[in-house]
Image (cartoon, rainbow, N blue to C red; front, side, top):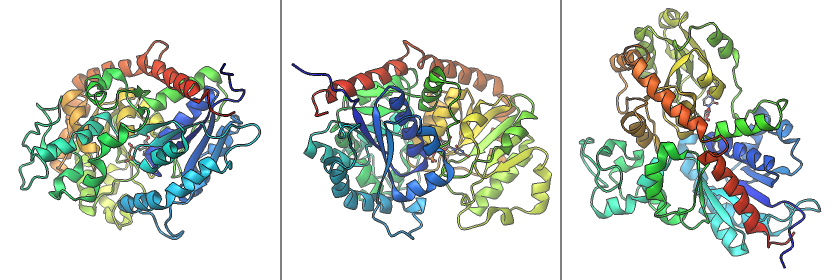
Length: 484
Ligand code: UDP
């Protein structure tokens, strides 16, 4: 007869060492802590240093005795800048050096003690395939998590067939040709909407090699966790389930996390998983702006602008006459100190209507009554946060899944305008005015309808609420027989 283990399951969570994945996986970690599970959260040493400096993980997780933060080397020299443009190098290094260390973590007993079982379940980013190898070798069940969008994942699942059909790689400038080989997207997916690396024309492109095995890779794990909800991505999810039958849609994750915290206690410290220092002064500025009058501008944690693009955005925003709150990170403008690039008279012109910070409390900004639009790079977290807040978008995708996401925002969900592949002041001015003034009612209505669905799925009986419960139950039942 099976005896119920005395100690809760011990789940190891291993995110990609990037702001978006670490942020959302910490929220998942806290959700699982709230469900009573023990968690070991593994980050690279470099990421650990930044989290200690800017985020409040230590103090926030103090109330969960079952939580521990552990580090793993990424294999790069300490003084390597780990620039985000060279993420593939970091990933390769982590993959080649990480597997042995990771396996040792699982088997050496270093993660368990009297009050904590050995690791009995793993949740790892699907890009870290070595975690699945190690999990299989030591017999621990693993679920993958993907922090990119399902629509992009589905395109990646289809890459082998696109290659076979000769749809990619392609040469030439005709980016408006429709792509026919992605079921469910035949009528609207153009070459320009494919993940950015598909444009290289090189079948051996590094990213192409990495992403064309997505379908095979993701189906190796017991299940797949994604940050979306059924009402948003239902049609794409049914295609994905033909490859990965067990998908847990638990998003919008940031709001799911917030709801569960609110259920538990009002007095927990506010969440910050940021790798930059958050400038909250923009909230006071927003407080003094009229309702829905401000467009929030942010291109996430990775995208960089050229000096020319910075100036086009600046003039476009200035000429639109619309108020704006703009996040310009210290490293936003490639190789430059951005402040020295913008002439004083141009800055003066927008001083009354524009506010700039180097990092904002984005979720709060999007929920603020003064914010009526979001000029975004469509990173998946930003996209989901905007959808949940009911804020329509202007999309200026930078790379990877963002090209696909922006097509979905504009053509499928009709929540905004897609500005991909252009960056001139006249277009920016027109789109900002269209979104914020001319077509504001239409976009705001659509955005509010979708936001309602995003909120409902998190209520008891909703799909994401139920899927998180299912995930916890699955973890409990799959770890029942493992040693306590
Ligand atoms: N973010 C933030 N403050 C900022 C800009 C971004 O808190 O000033 C957060 C944002 O809420 C999101 C994450 O950083 O959760 C960015 O992730 P996303 O997937 O959108 O883009 P990436 O940074 O991975 O390109």
